[in-house]
Amino acid sequence: MGATQIPSRLDRGGPRVMARGAPGRPGLDGVRPIAEKLEAKLRALGLERVETVGAPFDPRRHEAAGRREAPGFGAEVVCEELRSGWLLEDRVVRAAVVAVAA
Image (tube, rainbow, N blue to C red; front, side, top):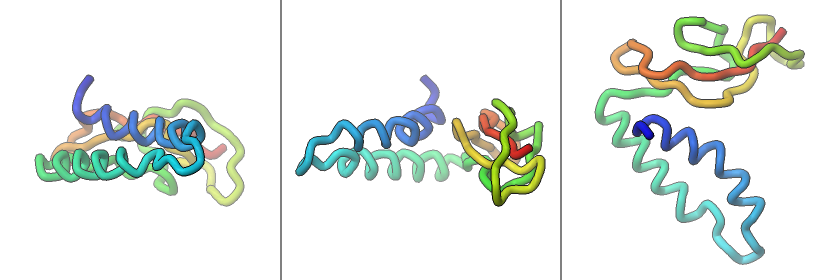
């Protein structure tokens, strides 16, 4: 697994971890600081996340997983991020997987 996949997996897994957490258990409290530190390290290496939700769909930076009606979003605008994407000096390292408003 590449380093850019780890923050995405933590983002996707977070809600499931919280849902499984029992009352009084911290859930993501211990995971979130690790994810933030990892992302800070990636940024220090020059990596940055691809802008997604609310941005116009750009096939050079986004991979469309589908289109759907999305109130509040114009046509051809990213309405949901399914997997984060990463850039290195404006070069796409990994495209973001997104849903696009119809």
